[in-house]
Length: 196
Image (cartoon, rainbow, N blue to C red; front, side):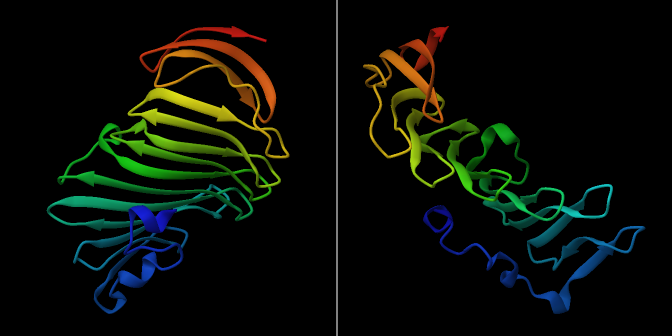
């Protein structure tokens, strides 16, 4: 949930923090807005496909202590593709230092994955969904190291996911309920996989 990591920004409210009366606006050669900045740390960036359709909106709040970005990406035709919230420390950050929440959607606009990142690596509970909205997989990671995983069928029944526990053991991996492979995991790192 976005509210859990960013209590001041709820989806749909992020733009309300800006004082538009003080803002400068940049317009591209096609007459479309590309940047709005209120010079108090709030910025909006707009990106477009070659067809002129909106491809991404980024709201950015920058302070001395940290940078927060809320990103919405759209498919051609205007359908929401992903929502992404990220936080970095300091004035200059790189993608590898970001803490973020990533929400991925399929072409029908249904949520298919909810991924958490810490310092640019998958961290905590990561969820994958069936088109019917039920959880297809739940993976628990510790800064990129796979600790536990459980997979489910489309009815929500648990599938045999192996004996992986606390980053050690065998993982039977599934993708949308279809068995994909058996992997040996040691200290959270996948050592060897056999495709099925």
